[in-house]
Length: 202
Image 1 (cartoon, one colour):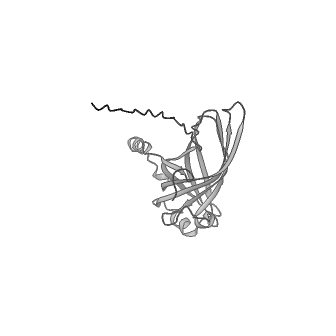
Image 2 (cartoon, helix red, strand yellow; image 1 turned 45 degrees about the horizontal axis):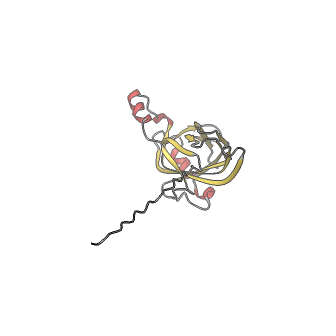
Image 3 (cartoon, helix red, strand yellow; image 1 turned 90 degrees about the vertical axis):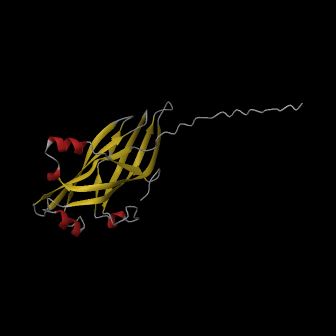
C-alpha cells in the first residue's frame, strides 16, 4: 500500500491599496473654443473647460505654477522645449482642490499675433469655419499635496505634466443651438488628461 501525502500550501494574499498620487483632469467634450476680436491689435480668444477631481480622502491638492501648451498634430508634445515648439502657450491661476472635491474650471487665453505662431493665427482669425483636430494640450505644473491622514500635516511637492489628447479647436459659433444636437454634443465623452509620470507619454 502506497501512502500519498498531499501537501496543501495556503498562500495568504496581502491586499495593497494604492492611493492616486495626482489630480484627475479632463477636457470637457474634448473641445477648445475660439473667437476673434478685431481690436488693435487683433486677438484670438481660446476657451478651454477643464474638469478636475481630487480622488483622495483627507488630502488637499494644490495645482500651482500652471503653464499650458498647445501642439498641432505634427509636433510631439513631449518636446524638451515646449515654449518654442508649441504654437501657443499661456500661464494659468493656481488651483486648490479639497478632499474628494470635483470642479469645472475655464482656462482663458487671449492670443495676439506676436504670441501665437503666425500660420495658426492666420488660419483661425476671422474664419468661423476653421478648425483643428488632433491637438494636444500639455500642462506643466507643480503638485503640492497636503496629507492629513496621519494625525498631522504631511506635505509633498513634485513636478507634474499632463497630456490631453486628442482635442479639436472649433469656433464658438459652432456650438450647437439646436436642443437635440446640443444634447448629443454634451453627451460626447470628455478627453482624459494623463499624468506622464504615471501612465502615458506622447
